[in-house]
View (cartoon, rainbow, N blue to C red):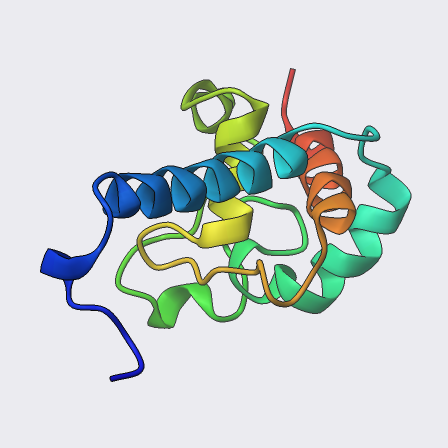
Length: 126
């Protein structure tokens, strides 16, 4: 056999594998949540290519694709949108998706995610 049945593995093997996988996920998330601050100018270019169709030119959730969606996309001009969590939360949403929003972890890198988030924050009405 090319693998060992669980019963034949050394005690703690499964725990070690689970711990290793868990730490990999935590470190991956942490490196995404921290790093250089986002650049809104770079984020604007990415937003125009990936986000504008749903979130709209004004960031109000009224993009051309919005009427066809089951739920309205986030409205970045509304302060309530920005009260849902901290920066790590919003980075996670862009990276992994949420509800109808697709994940972008395999499309843009962690710095680009911070750039997009930085640009999206420029829509906030104060």
